Length: 463
Ligand code: BES
Ligand code: MN
Ligand code: MN
Image (cartoon, rainbow, N blue to C red):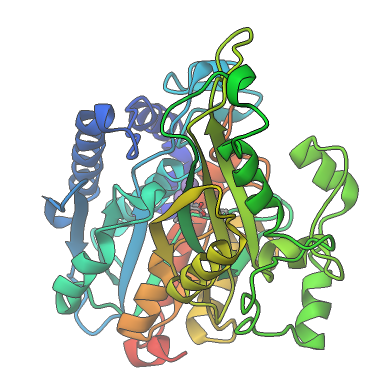
């Protein structure tokens, strides 16, 4: 039996070269011209699962992008761990400020730069290698594992809930492990215990039947771009809160204890400036930066357009204007209920001079996972072993809607054991994964499976 941690260190070079291969595949799930690339990334993931020693590896079609599955069930009586991740990535264009081609991975200063490096291919890869190294070291795993790696996370996982419902018994596990978040720093690891939900919609405002000369009709027609801006402006109060009646009704208030715990993890204004580059913070009055991001709901404009946006000037009164708007939600807000509340408010705000249509694009539920479970204790130990420090617990602002689905379906602990860093630049230019996160991640992920293997399935399942 080889010492697993020495084996991991001996394979560093290979890990880096293989991960680069994964990152060269532009598996952008939202752009249909990349469908073949998404398929290639699924095939690459499946190949890696096979190489790691998993069996029944399959690429399973859905209505859009496939799910990759693989298992190793050679440890009867031991816990079963479901490992979830995603092989799809967000779009990336060189012109958006990348210093190197987003799909030509490059190491600079100890970081691997590429779209998907951190979100989430690098972190999926970490878990596959942890399994492979454990297999190579001892010919078996300390637990049973099932991998579920999807290709639609970045578009809101439209087919995943149906997939899980259709394969509920087959996917059943005692604990779910997800590596798709960040730790605070290499010196201070952290475990995410809260994620926000999401409702995403498009709002289209129409005025005249066609674009008009703004000289001939300006001043007599309610410009749809202006009307859209008026509606959007009215969706916030001056104090930064969301101005939709009922929006906060189901928001669980923060206890004094939780606020004190969150305060220990607050971001300084200087750090916030370094991460954003914006002149100064903004947001809901009465809440700290960390509370605004992790524990309070928001409403954001993701994009807005209409009329003439090309080079130079064109005097025109546009026929329509559109915005993509989303809300991040916290327990116990329901994305479908929030959609209905916003729809009702827009109906009240929209003037009779325009018509409008609101189209919901996706819904995801928020999640809070208990931090005092036995499974969580295993995750804490794994970070202590992989990073040499005790992790903090954090609530994050991002969304992984399947977390709520797993909790509802199986009522087992979900461990959000991430290996990214806060400045990885997910979804933006120059996304990176620190090589140190890659290597320590493999050690930690292997340690986690070892820790989970020391417990009984029944004990691990308890919340
Ligand atoms: N890995 C992120 C989720 C995340 C981001 C967790 C930041 C914690 C901190 C995931 O890939 C993601 O981007 N999710 C989307 C979900 C949406 C498309 C439904 C998100 O949060 O915008
Ligand atoms: Mn992700
Ligand atoms: Mn993402």
